Length: 104
Image (cartoon, rainbow, N blue to C red; front, side):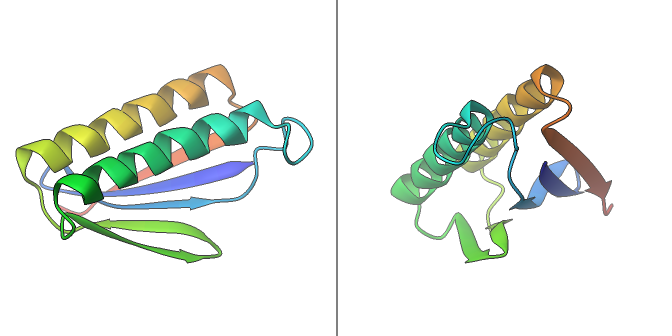
């Protein structure tokens, strides 16, 4: 299962941690993993192409994205990514789980 952890502060996403594998199909054939990866990588690349300091990320045991700026464009891109991930969670509840924490 892909586990996604969201941290919000003041209604803005501050971090996104993505871990695991969907286990929908074999590695390389898993459409759920592909959809999550595509949405996340496209969003990260969009943010960084507009403003290299808008977000940062680390690839450790999964992917950890830190949102450094809450400007209009970064917020819209990240919110769109989260919307896409939530729609995938609705469609594949056995393969994706999103947990959200609000810190203020």
